[in-house]
Image (cartoon, rainbow, N blue to C red; front, side, top):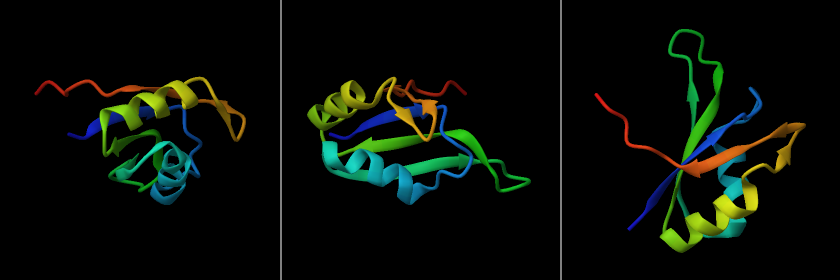
Length: 84
């Protein structure tokens, strides 16, 4: 069972590979996606990471929430389901 994690306050230069590399030390990353503006293609400053296990997700959240990366303090928590 994979766990989806929200990652906020990313720099606008962060890409999917950077995001995956940030989370990889904490467990298997099954997907890492930086959300981009559909018109400009520029990062919107947040993304989502899917970890292989709940334990890996918990470890990543505890290690990275509030951590300064490139001068920005990350917001890392379990992603909420999007209401439609």
